[in-house]
Length: 92
Image 1 (spheres, rainbow, N blue to C red):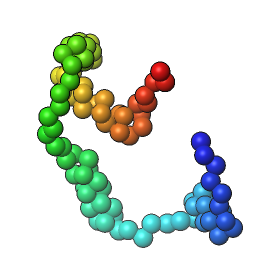
Image 2 (image 1 turned 120 degrees about the horizontal axis):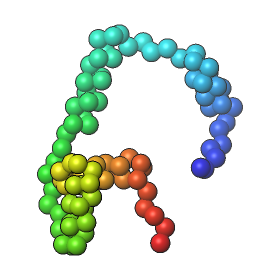
Image 3 (image 1 turned 60 degrees about the horizontal axis):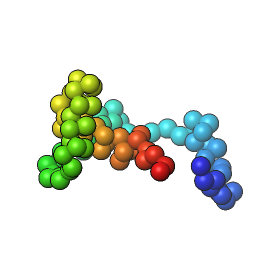
Image 4 (image 1 turned 30 degrees about the vertical axis):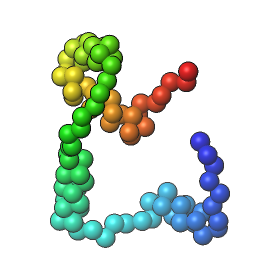
């Protein structure tokens, strides 16, 4: 992990945050509203067309069967994990 050099002011802010000295000024209503916005953002899906090799698709479908989920859901899960850094490309 890359080390970040902070100036004195940034160090003070970070220390203050880590000591739980920061308090949200959002009302409960605001918090609920922003949670709904975040959830709606995550639920947005778009259709895409994708060409894959037949052998790759067969392997993906087999893995999806083993996982007990539809293959399109399995592909979406793989893409989500990769996009969020939960799935890393293996070194060749």
